[in-house]
Amino acid sequence: MAVISQDRPLSRLMAYGRRYRVSTWQAIACSILNKIFDLAPPLLIGLAVDAVVSRDQSPLGQVGITGIFNQFLAITVLTFVVWGLESIFEYAYHRLWRNLAQAVQHDLRLDAYGHLQDLDLAFFEERSTGELLSILNDDINQLERFLDHGANDVLQVGTTVVIIGGLFFIVAPQVAWLAMLPMPFVIWGAIAFQKKLNPRYGKMRSRVGELNSRLANNLSGIVTIKSFTAESYELGQVTRESNAYRDSNRSVIALSAAFVPSIRIVILVGFTATLFYGGMEAAAGRIPVGTYSMMVFIIQRLLWPLTELGHTLDDYQRAMASTRRIFQLLDTPIEAHPGKIQLQPDQVAGDVLFNNVTFAYRDRPAILRNLSLHVPAGHTVAIVGATGSGKSTLVKLLLRLYEIPDGEITLDGKNIQQIELQSLRRSIGLVSQDVFLFHGTVAENIAYGTFGASSESIINAAKLAEAHDFIRQLPQGYDTIVGERGQKLSGGQRQRLAIARAILKDPPILILDEATSAVDNETEAAIQRSLDKITQNRTTIAIAHRLSTIRNADCIYVMENGSLIEQGTHEQLVADNASLYASLWRVQMGLKAVPH
Figure 1 (cartoon, rainbow, N blue to C red):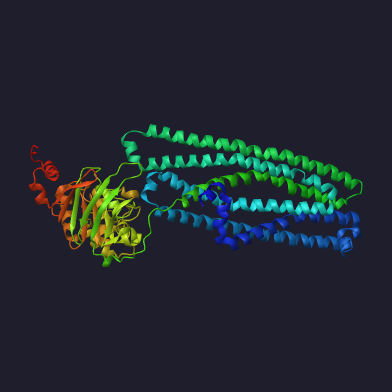
Figure 2: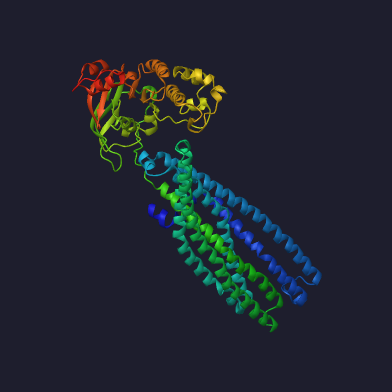
């Protein structure tokens, strides 16, 4: 699959497009019929010349239409019919190809984005947001542009060659070979240019991905850029990336721009040879004057459109470079096992067990080593430890954002790798220290994940999270737009909205990952009161640096270097002066450290 997507992108695209088979054949038929009627006017001109010169001996006279008036009346009627049908089929193919392009663009973007969402976090750690956005937007749009125009252009050029070539060999075989003489050179040139353009377009698409990555990263970090007065530096970085993209484009332009002039010279030879030799044959009476007139007009319809192959080839190579990147993304394997066991949140007791779990991030040493940890259903367990000790990793593993290579994690006795992912995550509410709010209203952000929640439910959740009072003071209350990533709100306000979001979800398992890290002492106390209420009869895992927030936990685990080194209640751990927990407690309380 991956080989096809990289080496034969057109084959892969055609295989993907089978779902649009009917629309595709309709568009192809209309393109061909449009070109057939588009090529008819030179034939009508030839008939008119023959009617004037040969009268009843003309082709029309030979089929029974005699008299110059009747012949020109017939030509006039045919002209109206031909032009009318040509216009109808032009309208039809434009509409069909554009709708097809929109359909492919729409479905391909949804398929790519849907696949992207199913990939594990390790994939996103190795790729920038800008690069992925470049695929989802620029590359898919590039493919849409080719389907909009390029496919029709290829079909119409092919139809022109077949019809005119066949017609020439029927009416004037002695001249036809001159008209066809440029064709092998045009085809050979197109293939040669295609081979040279292919790697250049691949490099260009890679460059635009890097540029988009830089721009997306800078826009996300605009506050940091401003606060460190790094505007000039970042402008220089963007200039460097943009120059690299411009240079790769110049390489493509230098080659693609040479195609049309080269082909024009070859076409000129065929045209002038046909004009000269055909004229001599007509003067000698070996071909009718009307046939020669038709050939002079129609040879331009055959040869000059071939110069447009340069633009079509250019669009094709851009589209194929984009197609490779799109299908490389679609071919990225999903490592997470989908699971088969369906769970209903109201049927989950919430007993969580980590059993001899070992885990390492890619290309890093193990961060968890044979870790075993039990969270009884309905209990509150706290996990503390230094930064990098593996606390937040436990949360990611429980949510199956990563899969574990050794050991197992169970929920109510079931291995979570066998539980259907959506069911598992619906049973868990996460309040992270890195709160992410979407661009939308306060109410929409609280209801995120519980879509369709009533206004009353949203307000009750906000009250429990101690957020209702500050929300009422916002300009539009619950309808206030929070801005991208919630930038219009303070850190503490964002944190309280995240807590309200989890409360509204009402999961059997609640994870608080530094849930009060961004709030002041007064707000922390208020949130702590609400947490004391919502954690009752609910399995809760609280990760904290502020030990005062977890002192009432049923059990506290202390982690160090990926292992559990201490466990017990707050009172038990503090009573042991030699414990790491007691040492951390004394530091945070400003007490004198006990010498070891």
